[in-house]
Image 1 (cartoon, protein in one colour):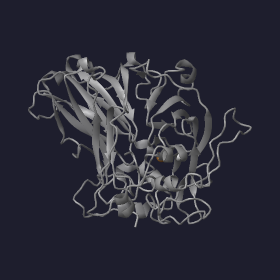
Image 2 (cartoon, helix red, strand yellow):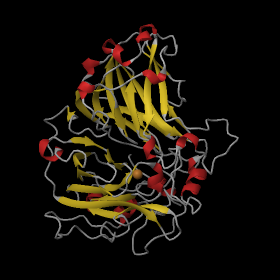
Image 3 (cartoon, rainbow, N blue to C red):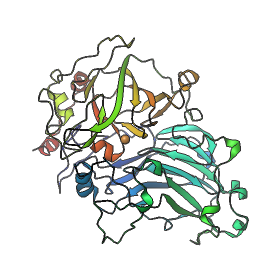
Image 4 (tube, protein in one colour):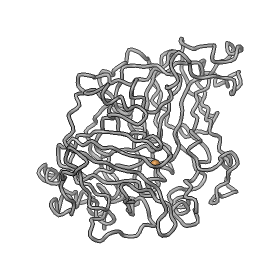
Length: 484
Ligand SMILES: [Cu+2]
């Protein structure tokens, strides 16, 4: 589980099947999706909620709703969009712009969320988009945040929050806290209110209001012009009636809650529910990673981590095999290579360097990094790009130590940092994260914007190859067959 084609397996062939066995932990809100080419952009996704017997904060709500938001593209991403995106025809390196937003598979103003008379509701928001970061709010209602990714929190209150690609946020609302002052005066007659998902349109490289993509198929019976504001309807009386107040007259947010509420990783306000269990170990190793984007020799814009763009058939069908001195994930998954030749991967062990007091994790120069089993690795991820990038680590959850937005968090919360598995790296900024490499295997670390992963903004951590063998890992015969 938490695998990816090229890293842990070959793709499941048409009509084939594979059973994933996994320990259901940590509890919380997750999701599943295909990790081959752009399958998840085309809809191969779903929510996955792991429950505790006693949920933290469960006394605060009586029912719950899952809202999975994603970008909708009129054209097929896995073939048409990807081949355009990574071609010399895309001279500016523009990411394909979504044609619409969908929540639970429905377009704007067609999704009704019923309350059935219950006033205290938990929402689990999952951002399964290929590209967009969203700001989420509900008209006139304070949102009490209780979970980020799979980390339960001491509740804190906002009127809106942002959620980047692949992140999950849980909050509860109490309809009795509905605040009339945020909506027009005739709202007392309304039987429903809007739940808003506002795409952060600054990240799009073009003026989306009038943009027609060069690859667009004009005859498709779907939305042509993108509207960055998605509206779902929270129905207060099960009547499925639309709100009686105008969409644009609502003010969300409240001055007495501060202006920073929309920050994605609000590590200054989010505090772990289980403080005592959250003892953060000291780092034993260090790794600095720098994100850049530039054109390659074919004039195709690619993403680079420490000057390496990861070429893999699983993400980028146009890639050419790289350095023959490196291992490659194109034919045999990295995990299988770790199991068969744990000492022959061609990646140096950590070394001391002049710019770190800790041993530095090394790579083979092709995006494969060797991480000793049980190492506690501090990663400083430096973003030279102006855009914000949601980085996801497979196989582990990491502590967020600090970010360029909140550098003081490192000292302030020493020993009790927030754990997530997706961190939003601020534009032209940095994050510092720490993970305990206690899960032997091949784990991708990548920007979860699908287009950026396609463009090579990923790497693989090979954690504890000898420990993998010592723990008795073997390659299942039926999975080996998928590679032939
Ligand atoms: Cu990115």
